[in-house]
Image (cartoon, rainbow, N blue to C red; front, side, top):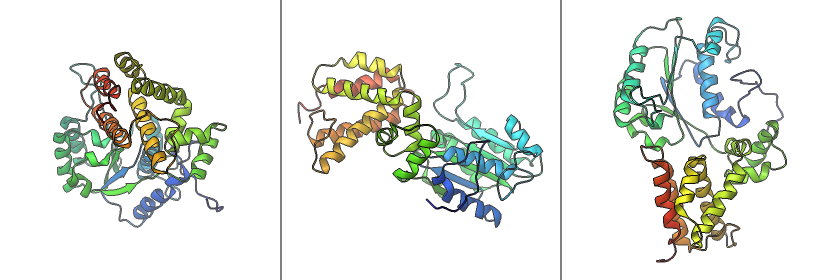
Length: 333
């Protein structure tokens, strides 16, 4: 990292953006300063790398009435409205409660996008920018994506739509082509460890970072939410099933009741780690005893299931189907 002093870009007092987000911020700030900012951005990369923090900071900077060096001042009327969540030109489209069932939807629907388009078609209420964030953008259903295309193709003046996506490939190619793509990548281990230390993660930081595949945000979540213990439980459960000693139904029920997405992610990371270690000619610490082909197939199946869990599936049944297969995964290999 450079020894030069850096401008601190904060989304709230005491919460600066991670240092590895600086290049993305600089690109967008430069385009905003010279008047070449596009009407639509696509911020993409794995969860935990600062996409949402940057989207929030950049939205505030665009709406601020007295920005300082391209950063929201935090004191003007617009910034106060943003802090209170009442700025009329700041819009968020995200997962909402279905009014008919009272349950959180698992997709963003067409009515939400139509409502957004209607608001963007009106003039700014504070005579400035209109900024809309769609997050997670990849959870727009096909009808919602088609509705958004009309707005992207006919943008209004001084409007900015920011799509935030952990899985951008789930967006249509046409939507992706209408946005300026900003990618977020895993930082260097040194940078990630420095950030974790700044958040109070010390002694176990390297192990957490390794468990999170080098992703510092995910490593921090592991530290905060007992994720390392959960990872050990996942490893134990998979090994028990692979040896024919586990109860797939009981394990599926336990996973479904306690962070199923995180457990499945850890399962995928464990399997991927075994594949990489074998490819390097070494013996993995986590080894279900399958050959490489079976190991790769179960890794792929775990990743497919991670996507399917975002849909209208019962988590316990979906997990049981995969976990039950682990007991016989190597039998017919």
